[in-house]
Length: 376
Image 1 (cartoon, rainbow, N blue to C red):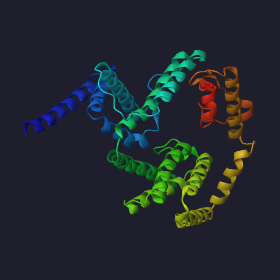
Image 2: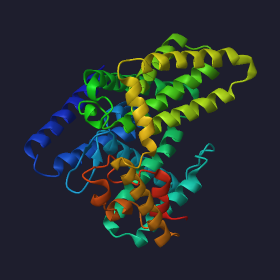
Image 3: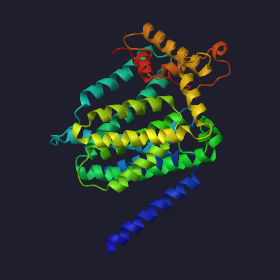
Image 4: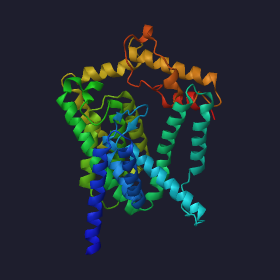
């Protein structure tokens, strides 16, 4: 009984001390250092809970703050960085103490470490060594998160807890965005409609929603075990509606190709599921296309993908061309991680006053990796 009250009192004192530090030393680095210490202690005591909290906060972390020269995606990135730091520290201590290695290790650790090494090695040709190393370190933290998730999610029980943690927050973020887009239905196809939503633009929103849509679809089609089908159907409907509000051509194409591949994996004995899904999809699509003004907007959006008169298409071609030129200049190690944003300059004569949504990228992950990291 005494220990129970002691834990509560200790937690209260820690919060009180942290609040006092923030109030008294707000103009110094001390509050940030205190936050990192508290986060590190929390991660050390409960790494699995920290992973769940990080994924719960993920849908609300797509907007950035810029303290000085650093770009931070809050609240997930400080927690993610501390997760990786604590995990690496634990592995170093285990190696020093010569503890036995677990048999079930991350299967792609060697190629992942090789890719991380190449990411830093590409800094040889970079125009800004500090910027490249900062970006490479940040990318490394994200890559190592896969190792942490593999270490934490080792059985069906932890996987179930993971789904319980992430699906409600994802649904809240999608429903929130759908409400915002309906409120601004006259501009739902533009990035400006997302100003009050958790997501910054339709591409980020569409990619996030598509992941959960495909997970729900896969389970409903393939999983014949006992589970709450009503709940999973509700999740599926939620993310389907969210996907219908997305205006990204890349997301449309990706979902169509992936759904086609999923349907091909169904055996002959479940043809009724294919017919039911395709019939429902066609009916919903037909209803959506008959809504006032929707058909013309979608046809214009699809046809504009190959229309060179659009400034966005000219800007995209310029970025692709710049990425190819960068690769040809340094085909082995590339120009350095993040170098595309440092070297690319928009041609005002071709694109006019158009400001690209992907201001720092090549609008192609493959070409950008090829230009920045080379063929190694």
